[in-house]
Each structure stands twice: as structure tokens, then as C-alpha cells.
Image (cartoon, rainbow, N blue to C red; front, side):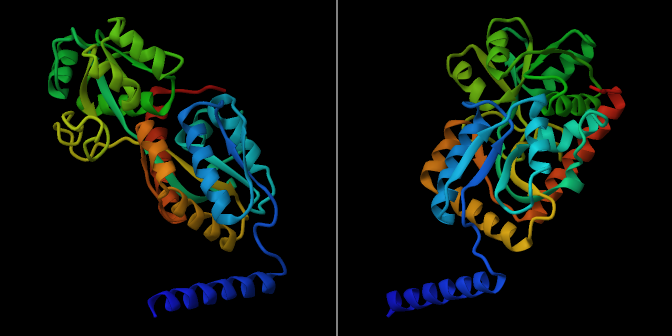
Length: 326
């Protein structure tokens, strides 16, 4: 009886779907879908897009073709997506950089505007980020780092993967709250930055836990604080900034799926459901965990709020530092 009930429910759902499709005169999707990635192959965002895309393809019944369009810190891919037809066949696995930062940094170079030109589908993952120190630094927690920075303003150095990227801007926001100033040293990625930290070239590193974890396990760097609201499963002994004297402070890099503005709500709902199912699959969860990521799912409105909140947060730092890349 139970199995029969399930079959009946499935049949009713399928019938309803076909009825809705016939009423609109077409069935979505009926051809391959492009999933645009703003970065080169092999990075975390690319790996997530391919893992999620495979599962979404199975769920939607059409191939999802991952297309890498790197350039201008993700803005090239975002601009391409914004100018694509709003028919559900061009998606972007976009991150906080091109959606919440670049339009503010490059208002005359970047022609798209996130709120105007995109419709959120779903948040996909968060990136576990933290503050890490060289082993020789005489500070083992956030309070001691802040004390050292106050004792020698501008002397401590911290590495980030890019300037002005989200990690740089978030740490600048933290330093303003803590009333300290340190010197940024930019690198071309988390990998070179963590190697520089382990070699003692810089005092601190702000970036992904996955990049730092092998060095932590080897005793070559130490964890100071994580920027999420909850402790990382990969580094459970490292306290969060929130619990280290700065309640409410949180910074998560993220990736999520957006589509061009004007895409129909029914298509967005289908895509959102496909994303939500895809990120629950074991293969996708494994990709998240192996790259220091936390899989999440959201409604379009929840994702919109994340984008808006980060846009405001980063814009305040950009304005205070008078940063412009035009």
C-alpha cells in the first residue's frame, strides 16, 4: 500500500508537470544548458560547478555544459551571463567577487548591475575562511594578535590572495572594528600565500581553511580564528571571531547560481529545486568537503539578501579606503 501510494503521488506529480508544460506550449528544459564559471578550470568554483552540474543534468534530463570564462576577477563571466537571453539556458555559478564587489570597484568599466541584471536562483556553498599565523609569531589567539597589532601599528603583515578581493575587504572591516592596522601583502592565490606564511615571509594569512590545513597538520602554521559563525569541522579547535570578543562578526565567501533578469519564475523554481537536490548528493558533498566548503541551499529571496548584505558591507570598506579600479 505504501509503495502504491508513492507511485500514485509520483504519477500525479508527473501529470501535473506535463499539464503545466503543455499549457505553456513547451517543456523546460528541452535542450542543453550552459553553466558559466567565472574562473579557470581546476579551482574550487569550477570543481563545484562540474559536480553540481552533473547532478542537475540528471535531475533536469538535459546536458549541463560547464563553460569557463575567466577574466577581471569574475566580471567577464558575469557580464556574459547578464547579456544572455533570459530563457533558463544560461546560468552562472557566480561568487561574491563579481556580484557584490566588482560593480562597486569598477562602476565605469563594468556595465552590469547585480540587482538590475540578475535573478538569484540558489546559494550553493560557503567557503570556510580563517586567520592563520606563522608558528614563530608570539600570538596564539585573536586577542593576542590584536594586542600585538596595537603595540606596533602597521608592522604586522597579512597575506591575501588578491586585492581588493573579499578576504582583503573583510579583514579591513575587522581591523576597523578592532581598532588596529596591519600591512597587506597580496599574492596570486591562497597556495602561494600559505607557502609564504609557512616560510615566515608574512605574519598572517587570511584565506581558505583547505589551503592552510596541510600546513597546520604539519605544524608549520597555526590557526588563530575562523570567520564563520560555527567552528569548522576541519579545525574544531580554532575559535571563531564571533566567540573571540567580536560578537556578530562573520565573513563567508560563497558561490551560487544566478540567471539573467527576466527569467520566468517557473524556470527559476525548477532550477532552484534541481540545485537543492544536487547539493544533497554524496558525490557533491564529497567535493564540498575535500575543498573546505560547506554545501547550502536557499530560496532565491534568501540568496538575494546575502548578495545585498555583502554588497553593502563591502561598499562601506571600499568607500572608506577610497578604492577604485577604473
